[in-house]
Image 1: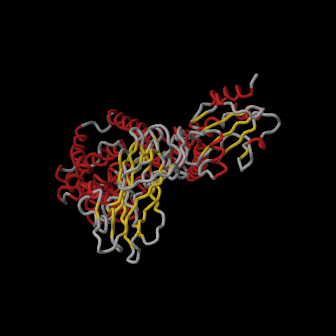
Image 2: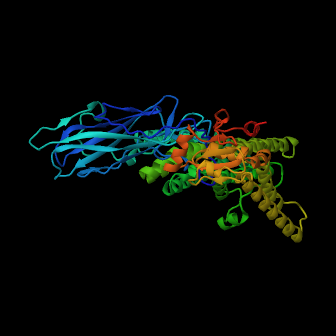
Image 3: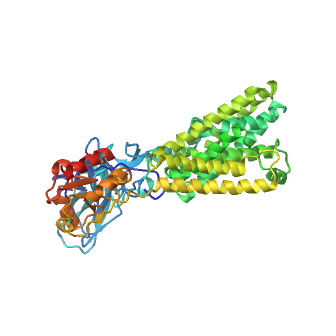
Length: 608
């Protein structure tokens, strides 16, 4: 995770194994690494100098487990990587990794990019023209991090060796493993990795749709646009549309229909522009909802629209823009500008569905076709609003001042508050101080509403300045509370960082010892630190212990020796030692532990 990404992972580690090499003779011998079995294959048994060959690394992942993809969605997770050893006379091409899947797991609020089942990783090599006839080999390692639905394990690497026999040009070459490489095993090149490497499941589906033909793709993405209307973030547009066209209900239906077309065109154009910018800039914006601050930004917008439903202010097209266009709010330009506004409201929320197309355009450079498809998707999104605009004329037959209209607006306001909570709740769960998080968001929204959005009659210039200052102070206070809730420091435990000292050297004052093994990629370690070791009762109890921390993110020989000594099977692990230096195996903890349970073990370690 980066500093703002709300992709949190509960990595309570339960397995640690040594990195064991294995040898595979064209895939004949394997070394069982428990979670992942690896076999390495070559397309040739014998080959001429300057010849080309292909390599396949096949990993069979145990059912119920997965490994991170080559490009994991979180920066703390270890990617799956194949590294080749340098061999004189052999040149190897960049590795072509398989297409990962985006799947949801209990330890993450967002989907993770993973490999499951049996995967094949390919590369190809070429021999130099001066390599002498001899037995050679291609060797390397497959490095990976395995997880199940609840935990992520310590990174591992498995070695492999693939034998090759270089023969004279007057001797025949021998192809093998045709069930893996097919009949064209001697083909010197592989398909370009950029055509499929690193594509998510949704992106691959989008790619397949596009490749079936432009007409098919246009129909498909028009339907995708219609599907966007089923997402919660589109709800705020309904009252805006009804309100906008309801004000023009005196016009004829034909005229209203034409204005609705301008409205939808505005939505489609903004949609295509945003999609194009996203594609040219990369696919990162599709993951913005992993950022707590972006989610808060969207939440504030939705809450502001809810406030407008309760009468705090009215949403209108800026008068300066309408004056510049030389048209009234009810004209074609007004409808078009309103459509642009609605498009800006919808597009960021729609990332979940359009991310596949965004990734394809970004990775395959399909700028023109991608822009067209985004436009069509925007049209699909906007079609229901044509009917909504035309039917809004029915409002002219109803009492405009009736209480029913006020009630409907407030109903939409309540629905918008629910949508805001829908986006906000997952982020609040990751905060160390949920109460502070919600109070901070309330402060930001309250400052914006009371200081700037809400307009009452009779406000003097002086009062407007005072309320703007008050609003700014409230927003700053809210930002402070949210930031502290997201990054609150853990309790004031006096940790001693392990730095090659022996545990005996660290023991002092005849106290028992608590040793915390952690890693940067282990979210459960962070959860243990944030929720358990920050507890005031544990902070106070820690004064009776020698508290030692061991960083096992990338263990060196000294830390590896300590890990072996205490038989660490995963992270986080907490080890207790008595005041006499004896390990208390019955109190050993692997994984997250609640404060009350931790206190009980600490009391047991202290003894009577």
